[in-house]
Image (tube, rainbow, N blue to C red; front, side, top):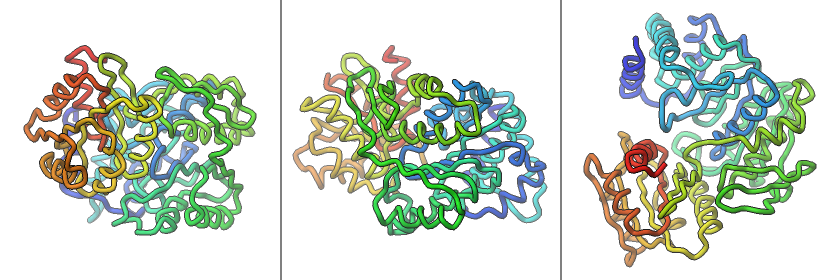
Length: 428
């Protein structure tokens, strides 16, 4: 397969088989590939929000320390290759094609089992990390933790649990304690756990899992993370003995994500050559697209992938922090299986107007249906829907013409199309 054929192959698998939790098929698939994951040590990351950003901060720190580090995140936002990072760069298109070919051949040889697209994408990550000789690799759980395909690894040196809230309830449960128990499934014997402060119902299963694994649990409390300055360029954060951490990633959730990475790096420094300078430099150099990503101009444009109530709440905090009482124009598309009614209630109370779009996803809610849902809650708010093939592009044209700050949000799946529009219109 070449690169395009590899992408098409995985999309075909995705269309034929959706989410299937469990580890047996993944174990069988990796055995066919000679278990490359056993050659790498892992840092596992689970949680509802903040996983990708935390992984990005920690990757940057480890790179500064000269460690050969890999990172696997999902889903892809702007390119299939961005999910696979090793030793300073993302996977090349040729390596991607070669890896998908190897994984597809292994999948075809399984007796009566068809791995999902996510399982095969995860297998590609393991294949790639072993090929690149990574000393450490950071694994973001795709869904939950215990039954996620990433959780077959047995060489975990550290587990990180980010903010947990209600999401994927149909699969993970309708109580925060049930969801947290799934996330805590990444905890391994002897591998220290770093966890952001959660609601007590969520902390109980995490503490219980750490105790059962006889491994230390490091809790990062939110009152230990102090943002003392913030503007459109950076924020300055104090966390314990780490004063004046410079964060170029904006948004109200980033100080706690950075603090998790700092705590993880501090714990890992007992086994790896990580110094304070590496932590400071790594935090400052971290970038992660689509997470309160600001493009300054007339008007300013914010790209944010928030897609559940807790993420939307943090987005609202960030917008208020940056723009104050200035009216905001929103371009919004959502997936129909999300809690969009709650997201609408949280976000649009101060909107000047909203342009709804249909995301490029089989799970998409039509822009007209999203408009109706917004009008039901905010009857006086001006809402315009764009439901055509080029609806996202037309919505951006309409939004920037309002000359108020534009916030694009609701799902990660619309951000690639928005960036394409921005490039064509010299807004990058």
